[in-house]
Length: 327
Image 1: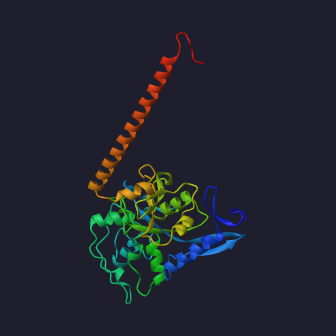
Image 2: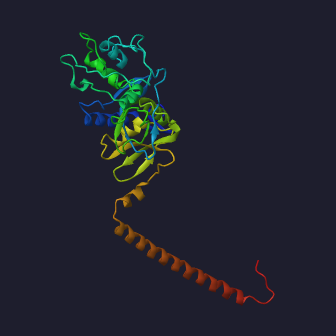
Image 3: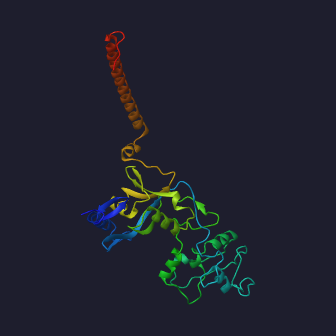
């Protein structure tokens, strides 16, 4: 049967049989049994669709820029039960700045001490003596520190709601937006993940990743690479399907990883070249010496052949009678 009819597309004009993908998918899920990296699959109108989390490793050399604020989000939040300003309203009686529930970012918040309710997770802790510097950064961390504000007595959030608040804006290895560190380079080799499906091509996966962390840079500035333990590095084309390719490479990330790199700085490394990357310099130097000697031998062989042919031609020319021409 034609692969385009009973197959899964992995790139431009590249298909692989559905049975092969399902076999690799079974191995993939067995490897991640009991973990959230397991993938689900279904069929829609005869088309196999796989979806789940894909691990992507940071391999950037240049810094990235985080958005100053999320889309449709104000820098100054309105007062709410979990906001910093609302917490100040609860404990600062008669404060001239708390009557209207709005404070400007130039004014530092008053010193407060908050004791969490019983059975409250330890990560909500006690907030003490916020300095001017902290207040400036907290004004920008609207979606990351809102759950660390003051809760009204007797009003508790469920653990699921608290997780949603903490994850409303994702961090890059604990790094959230801060007006002083909005431009930074993620630690090389650190890992993140995005939820995608097998119908998404490389540009779509890049957009999902950048939107997750609110990164201002254009998706066109980046590329995805398959980096093997041998040193081989293959750049994914814009028409490739990263999730399917990840499945076909196998689940073990010690063998192959998906890296995010710059479009212009990333470099492909073929398998033949990758074999020599991990050798020590003296060994590589000996390889170069051997290749140079082989090259010299080939050059001498060509020169001898050329001289031999020249002698034959000159001999034939001398044998021709004067005035004769060769046709």
